[in-house]
Every structure is written in C-alpha cells, then in structure tokens.
Image (cartoon, rainbow, N blue to C red; front, side, top):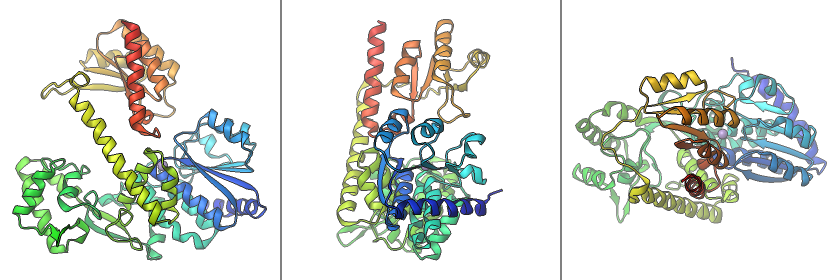
Length: 474
Ligand SMILES: [Mn+2]
C-alpha cells in the first residue's frame, strides 16, 4: 500500500533540517543524474534550496562511483543531496560524508538500505519506482515540503515521469506518486491532461514528420517513411500548411484529428497489425499551459526529449537552466543541442548501415537467444534446446546484478566447451574488454553507451576496445 503520508511526514522533518543548514549559510551540493529525470529532479531540489537562500551548487554526473565520491569529499561541502543516482554505494557515501548527505531516489535498494536515515526511496513508501514514482516526483515533493510556494515546480515532475517512460498506466497515463505531482500541476493551472493523439513532436513537427517519427506505437508502413506519409496525407486532402508554414498535430481541430486517424487506420489496415497501433495512438497528453505554443516545452514528452538531448550531448547546465525557467538564450541553446544530437545519432546509424563489414544481412532470419542466464545448467539447457545464442548477465534483470568476476568465469567456461555463440552483458567499457578477452563472442552494451555523457563517443570506444582484443587474439 502506498504510504504518501509517511513520505510527506519524512520530508517535513528532513526539509526543516536542510533549510536550517541553508539559513546558516552552509555550502550544499546537489548531485544528480544526466538524463532528463535527473536534470528535472536536480533542478527541483536546487530551486527549493536557492529560494530558501541557500549557498547551493548543482552537478550532473553519468554515474555515482568511488572516484566521484572521493572528489566530492575533497571539495568539502557541508551537505550533499543525491538525486536519481542508483545508490548502491551507501557504505562509501557514509565513509566519505559521515551522515552529511541525503539520497532521494526511485531505484530499488535492499530492504536494509532503504531503512537508512540518509535515504528517501520511493519503494520504501510502497510506490513502484519503475512505474509510479520518478526521481523528479520524489524531488518535487521534497521541494513542496520545504515550501508550499514550490508548487510551481510540479511540471518538472510530470516531465521527469514521461522521460523515464513511467506513463505506464491506462492510455499512457501517469499513476501513483507521479499522479500526485500531476494533480498539483493541474490544480495550479500549469498542466492540463487531455486524451489526444500521441504523435512524437506534436507541438513542433510538421504533421507528416510527426507521424513518420512516431515509433511508440510502431506504425507499420508509416514509421520512418516521411515522404510516403506526406503524399498519403496530401492525397487525403488534409490541410498540411498554414500560409507558408507547416501545421503541427497540436494545431488540428477535432474534425481534422478524426480525419488524420481515419487515413492512418486505412493505411495500417493495408499492412496488417494496425488495430493495436491505432489504440496506442490515443492517450494522455500533458500540456504545459504557460509555455509558448509550438515550442518543445509545451508538450511534456517533447520537453523530456529536449532534456535528454542536453544530457547526452554534455550540456547539462543548459538543461538545468531550462528546468529553472530560463528561456531565450538557454532555450535556444537547448534546441540547437537537440538538432545536433539528432544529426549525430543519424550519422552513427548511417555509418553502421553504410559499412558492410559492420553489419550482416540475413534476409528474414530470426535469431532466438536465451538470456539472463546465471547457472551453468541453465545455459547448457538453452544451448541444447537450440538457442541461437546464450546471454550471460542482464541489463535490468534480477537485483543484484551478476558480479563481473562471476560473469568472466561463466563466459570463459562456455567459450571453452560450447559452439553456440555467447553474448555477455557489459556494464562498462572496461567490462566489455575483459569479457571479450575471456572469450565472449559478443558483448551487449546498454547503459555503458546510452548513459554515457556522449553515447556516440562511448560506442566508438567500445568498438576500439573490441578491435584491440581481436587484434591481440589473432
Ligand atoms: Mn530516473
């Protein structure tokens, strides 16, 4: 059962202590994750403390590791607040800061760690931190406890929630603690929730682009086919331009939206499997009412995309500024960053597609793999049952993840006795190197690339490391 009262009570007393530090002129640092939920949550805590007159700094990092903890310790802040950083290093934090820290988070922890006085975790209060409580919601409610005037930060919680893909309720709605934040934002008139068409870029993209860019849900035959969508919509007689400029999904009236849906339905019908996609196109849209129309800040999902680009391109300061309400210069810079991010993503994908040595085409071959294997006999069984590959380790499987040493042992053993290719999950680039050396045929990299400050550079690094190992082996 969710225990909202328990969480708010906890924040009530914690925020008093922290505001006292602020009024005493102590130096406080907020350390947060570089992704959109991280930027939104770090900004909410930062704003709450700044407004209370604190001497506060915010820093955005891809991960919390012992090196960073050592560096922070040497900078001698009086108090440290960590948001959206999976806090498995509580012992290290305790050693470094001796109780002068607070972890506000939604990543699942051990029962024991969650009870610690330095931790406020969504799971402890009965919320599913993966679906119902993003870090920005956790941070927003802390800010609200510090002062009711911080209610204007509620839209940040909505942005963080959709950024972390927690719009997992019926019709892509927010639930649980995120709903609490949303209701605050609604009652303050800052956000409206409406049932509407969920195309990507609904405030900023030409209609045909918005349709072609939409991949959740995947629209068979339409996703990725900008020109085809354009000619289809044009033939259907939908008015796509207003004077000289393209219209957006958000500018369509309800009759036009109905028409658009019909045209899409007809085209999905032709390719089959369209009914589900069509249902997935309608859901809760969150509009930030005080933002200008046709900017990426007006729609919460587009706001999230903008922040993610800032995080991934390493301009986290810009992301924080936008969260804190700076517009003209910060917003322009964020929008430029988003454009650059799209270009660099396209270039990396094109690079893969254009270089035949990097990709094998197998026609319509379907590869079946068996993943999440921990025990030797599970792997043997998967191999015997005809899996095309086995995978050791897992990106988001059972907690705690498989230790690297154990993973290395399994991979080495498999490479020696079995023919079936083996994929190993590498949590870092260094792990990728060691797993390749141990005999993994493939490494799977997820967070090591996507959570890096620059995924493009990280992908390049992984490739270089693997080439090195291959050269050494031959
Ligand atoms: Mn998060």
